[in-house]
Length: 65
Image 1 (tube, helix red, strand yellow):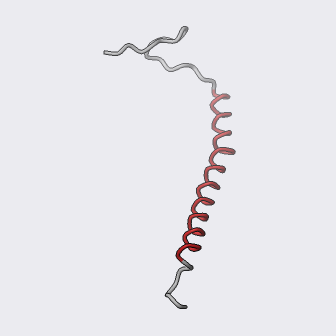
Image 2: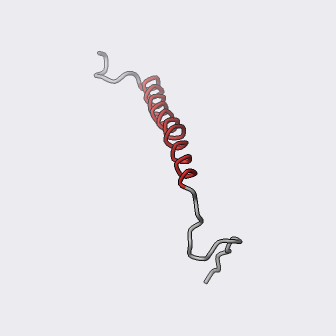
Image 3: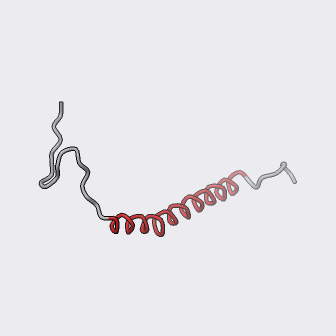
């Protein structure tokens, strides 16, 4: 069995105390800054993939149209 190190001042089996204000701040940072950047990156990456695919393979539609 592996022993896990215990931090000073922390009781084993008990989560460290985190203030509600700190949790709200972290949530606000994630909700307002990180997720929008991730969403724009995903949509932009997909658009870039489609654009490069169309440059290589041509536009969608029947051939010779």
